[in-house]
Image 1 (cartoon, rainbow, N blue to C red):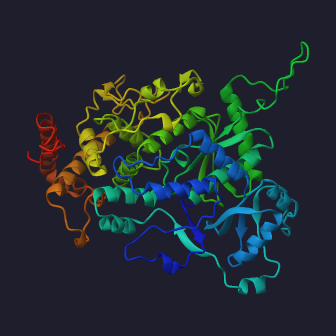
Image 2: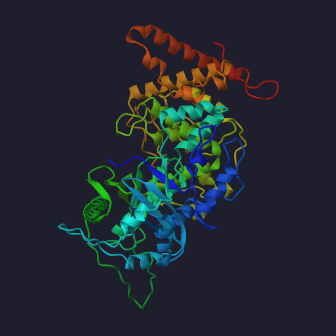
Image 3: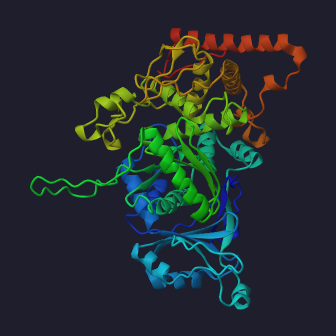
Length: 585
């Protein structure tokens, strides 16, 4: 199994990272105006925390624009395995002989690596022309001209004696101890949710490395399919990915043959000679089988290759050892990419969305509601759909329904994939921001209250219409696939797992309601707010002899939530027009 994260290295002095309070490590990023790095730096300066209603007015890029820029950036980038000690200044001077460098960074994963982006792609060809195939003694090297290099020092004793300018700073998800410390230092529940988001979200460097990994795999696949594109999808691109998440990618073969201009010459039309197979599935299996063999035998750094060709969606699974990513490669998975684009839009529309999703996912993982192992658990994708649905149900709605986005779409947005209507407005700048100004604190509490009382036995979740609907089948949890509407994305969830989710949601709502009345002081250094919710469940720690007490506690919380719901219907606002929440049973 590949390493779940890696450490990034910068030239920042270690003392500069020490603060009176625990903070997120800082990273130096070199970037030219107009690049993705420069855009990211500007957004970070302007965005601040996810305060209610305060949104950046800077025009937002469309999903496909970001994908295109990232892919072009990756094509100008190389990956180098470096010695443990060397002069960074001399290293960059050496590479600059082949062309100007746009930016670079270092990270650790089974050794020290450098990611270097040139300003022009031609610089890579120049470097490759001056690179030799290594001599490996008794073994035989398979010659492969890739963008993954190995740096060696000609004069090791002198070079290694120089003090290295590269310093290490780990880029991993925070430990439980550090996370609790950060959350306890926070000033409010809103601050806690934003802190958790900043600690877990993908960094700029991590994102660059993901696109570079896809680009390196594309180089291998291009030996058979010269115009193919390997595209990342899922958590790596939808803005909901956390550090250490897998890298999902698909081999896009739709571009093959499209680049040629069809010139009519009389009554003649030229086509490629191809081999035919009985079905598209068989074609997919054959293509992935060959690519899997290439990765296994010729792909530098690709280890543990598994060809899982009989799955519903055939794939090749492998570990990319230099980056530390666990990778899944499929072919022509365009609906999955469209789902990634939809989540990208929802995440960009309101700054509260990602903060709430990350916190709910972390809460679910802390209580073993989700798992990296396939089974009867709720998936992160299902939880994200539940959060989006909940935010569509607010008054006024924080997020638009998918049907509304479809209504706003232009002719250029029209998209039909395998008979499924995947049309929605793709221009973020044309979607009117929500007038809802509810705090993350309130939204977190009411998320647990809402799903603690949701009639899962009767209703399904549907983000297309943003309202509860009668379940079309007997599955314990039914969440409609946003594009393949006949599918239930949570069909795997068992009744016992759903019941566990409901009980924990009620318990969490109860805890947050109680803390409104008696919140510990910030100086007490005791878990509170979100930190309390991440502790082991009280119900889980009780002994089997206290079943009656457990039942009473569960009924008490349920009655509390019903009382809150009833009170809100009768007295929805106070004298200042603000919402009030009763905590009396």
